[in-house]
Image (cartoon, rainbow, N blue to C red):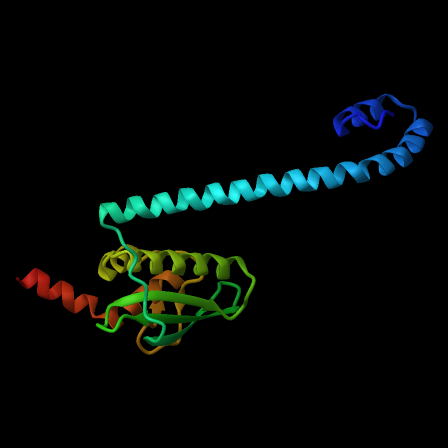
Amino acid sequence: MKPTSTIADRIMDACKLTPRQRDRARKDVHLIIGEDRKELAHETTAAWEKRVEDARHASDLRVAAAEARGAVRERLPDERTSRTRTFRISWPNGDVLQIYAIAGFYADGRLGELFLRVGKEGSITAGALDAFAAAVSLALQYGVPADVILSKFKGWRFEPNGFTGDPIYKNVLSVIDAVCRWLWDTCGCGATQQKASAA
């Protein structure tokens, strides 16, 4: 093999060889590819850095466009009030799913973030609930009212559901339903809607 040939050329040439010739060629390729790997690593690093820089620039442009439309993220202060609630919901097979819901509030009492932690880490349920909580938190921080979000997700039905053994939320339709009903009561969204409909 020629030392100046590319890796693709070497692979094509190797396909044409007999097994014995391939074994001999492998030894030669290992010697030659060592140099190519250094060059390829350098090229890959430079290309990766360019892609990262392009992504940062695109992200900055998207943030600037959102701010121009009036959508500005209002982050919570470093020290804030929060409330935590534990839910235990049974799966159909008898296992119990334990969920810890943590709601963070702005100084004026508005809901600003949500964290959902599952007692059994690493499960699909844990990942899905974490993603849901992150999406709700971002929506709240970009100004979507809590009652709009909570009214949308209250009543969703999927497993696990059923009896919880909780005196307030005895029967829930899903984990999302339980969390949204708790937040609805905690934030006083029901009282806000009653006042709005009475006016």
